[in-house]
Length: 331
Image (cartoon, rainbow, N blue to C red; front, top):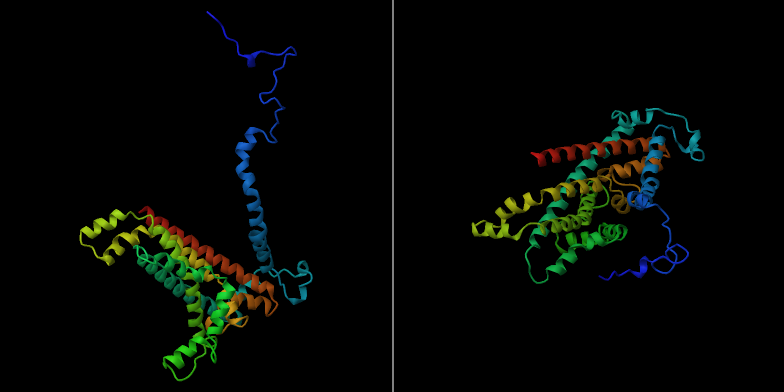
């Protein structure tokens, strides 16, 4: 019987085996245990640092400012602003005083604006996504066209609407008065009560493509066999939408409505670009109201207190919404 000895197991005369590659083996910078356990956290560290610097740190500074009497006299030295306790919050919630009354009016306008805008965006986006579900020629082009308002920069889109809504030479009044003859007088769209309608139209036009995009993605997960079985049973389009599409989209819609609500309630760019710093009372959203309270009166303590109250309200609404939707899902 012949025994074969591998040449790699034969030690040289010096007693040490040479490395497999012929060169020196590099030692890892981190131990294997640390690399496996700590590498995910190490990769997340830059994102966490940016989150702290961009969001959490300004929020902490804003909460600190809300307890200070930070007016124009202490702009150069914030730390010298006297401690105000809860005075800024008392002034903000006192609806019998001018500041509290104006904030309450702005809050109610924002609630009405948010409900109508979110409802219209969801309805238009869902209807468009369902109508685009079936395959037909030109569907891809229509889908891409629907997403243009969402893809446009906010300033470019809203400033275009601002020009179109001008009273004397705007395109909207030209169509309504000169072309269709619906009214004899040119209405103001950026002043008075019509400003709420103008703001609602612009915000809905800008946000409904996002609802369309999310609902379109959700429709891809619904099995086609469900529609075919319903069609065999004689179900029409409305019954298929009611009993198959909408129940299947419920998890998607729960997240979509919450995101639209938070974005719309906090929307600052749209009213600021449309009306500049002086928004009409009918379109005085709370974001613009807080900005004016802070930078028009130079009372940053009061403005910060309003911001903290807004943050608490949104956290409360979000928590209640998630609690109710989770309970409904479990039941």
